[in-house]
Image (cartoon, rainbow, N blue to C red):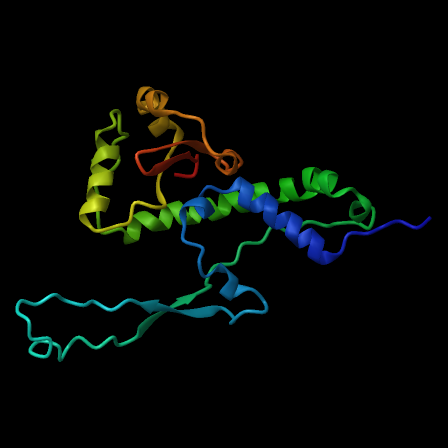
Length: 212
């Protein structure tokens, strides 16, 4: 009887599962346009539509102030500009493993440094482009006040309640240990498989990452 080999597509899918399960950054970023960057998609650049900025005016006359109320479509370009590579040699013998064994012996090991590289990039980039800051930069929070202040700022800026996340480094989690202990509650099954997931409460999902 001949050996059964996994195809390249299967290897890629197993690696993708390993990567997603080992990253925190991918859990807190908007991935709506992820499919656009696939080989069958639109290449390394996609156009993201910017919603119109309409205004409310006084009075019943809908024509008096409507000259600048056209729903003009504008876009910004988002380019795939970073490539991370973790080379590994896979033998024909490796390809005969059961998928679960292949994931444990090969892709899980390969995706650990990949996940760390991605998280490090995400968490070193976000602070540089964030215009809203609460707390004191460089000072580890020791109470839940900074978490509350962050939630208030998001609400004041009109951010939706869905998909809010808090990512702490180990020292930050230590400083908020009593608060996190008090708010911890059973999580949904899909959240439990996410790397670094702590708990969800007050419209926020809490994560821990050593790359913050």
